[in-house]
Length: 451
Image (cartoon, rainbow, N blue to C red; front, side):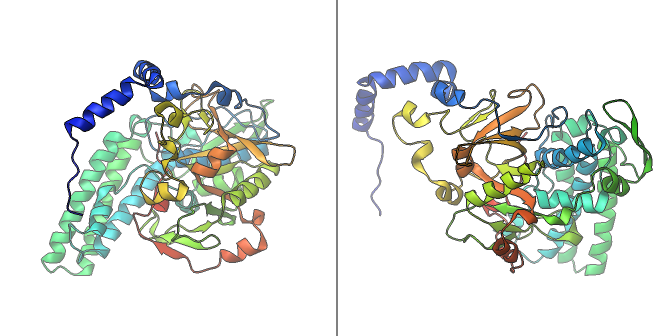
């Protein structure tokens, strides 16, 4: 197709005439130019359906705030764990340290990155694989499997044992300098390889580089504790847990969760990802000895069924979604019926792609992790609305809570994490399959990092 199609003066004249002749376009222009697209597209009847009334609900302490960091996946994971601690000991409130896993995630991601650099020394520097590896070595984002790896290796600590710092509240500067240093390490490793240095020498260089990474992280975040004192008091101020613990011991006592029982279910309806199959993502991970991630792909209805079953057992559910889509941020409402952008513009904008096409064409992927803490059911027991605990503080949404409509779940929820006991026998058997490996840049390899 050689013919060029340019925008001609007659095209511009016709477009101006069509727009000027439409009263609806004039109203839309006045509204959108005054208040913005989403405010003008807001549907009050859709908003009204998002009241905080649920048939199944778990409740826990005060809302947490990830502030200006991309640690949503850590906050969501720790929120599912702290619920167990609050319930087990009858606490009024409790919060785990989010700086503690941040430290070790950055440390492990740095080592993972250097391993990928050494593994691709003979790949072209300007090739897609090396370019991808260099693009974001230690970003804040992550997934459940990566958090599980951190807890299995390092345990957890109370917030008081490793409190927030300026660099955990706002990770931008720390990430920038650590990324710069790691790219310098990648350059040095590749140059050393080209100069003929062997694997043993490169390995020693990697160890020395990791010592520098530790120093940088300790400078920014403080030194993570090896032991700490704990005094937990219940709602009646009675001491219910006290003593000295290691982070691993504290996880066993305070949480007692079988991490390996929890599995990641995804819902990706693209042609290359058949339902009922397991998947992994090449070069995606953090803790080297635990390897990469693993998913089971299922239809949305199966993710909902398993999530509701876990909620019925009084346990919250970790999930990942594309939070920016059809979202009224200030009100905390994720609902395709609460915004009508297509009617505002007069042609399909949000409706121009289906879920599979959005994944294939780069329009959507998982960006944020939160926690399901409730669900509203219709007369037939089908979900209509989900209660969501966010990690953006109590001032967001409604006391820190969001709502998520069931149609929105179908379109934009990509992952839930549940105990495998809530799967069917067939689904549990499918977990044993050899996973299909996806490319590093596949949308199912995206990391939840919305801040």
